[in-house]
Length: 259
Picture 1 (cartoon, rainbow, N blue to C red):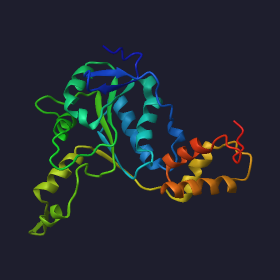
Picture 2 (cartoon, rainbow, N blue to C red; picture 1 turned 90 degrees about the vertical axis):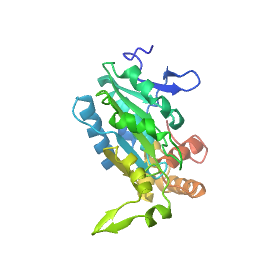
Picture 3 (cartoon, helix red, strand yellow; picture 1 turned 120 degrees about the horizontal axis):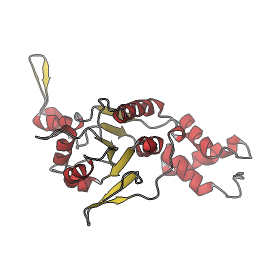
Picture 4 (tube, rainbow, N blue to C red; picture 1 turned 180 degrees about the horizontal axis):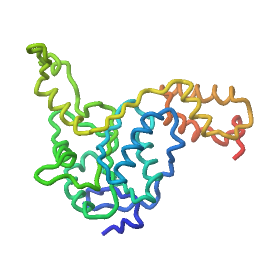
């Protein structure tokens, strides 16, 4: 049994079917996340409402890869763990165990975010059914001390095909979605807070790079050129690429950085 007074996060392990306490947390902080101020503000407000016992929403963070969706959730834990916020991470394939996880924490005095990274489902996938139950309850109401936050590259979590839209009809001036479209929308609709993340522009990418090199000794032009070359090689200009650039080039002879 986990002592949640001293454990801030846990990960569900399927083979042993238990929550493993996390001993080394990712140290990312909210102030380190650049270029997503609007999304950050909305998720922080929702989380603070949750911690204060006010009505709050399950959250879906969807959009472009590498834009800070997962880092934002991790930063929330670092910001609010001293206010009894706790995080439970679960993989998509383990969603069938959600009811058991919720049963384990619903009577605890702390407040829990169950977090699933890179959540999406394929056609014929039934793993989303336990998630629906946890998000809105079944015969038993969802616990007041549990929220579900997920990140995804898909807005509606399920694959969308052209045929689904072709089956949609206009009747008496009103749009009537096909059954398959309704099924897709009904899942994402259970997230009362849906935040979109878009590819970051060059200026934002370079701002993030600068945050990793505050004591760079040479010209910023030199640093930015190296960072842009790295981004072109990786076909992405985002926060993840900026961190990878830092990991690859910190300490090299042509980047004289004073640490």
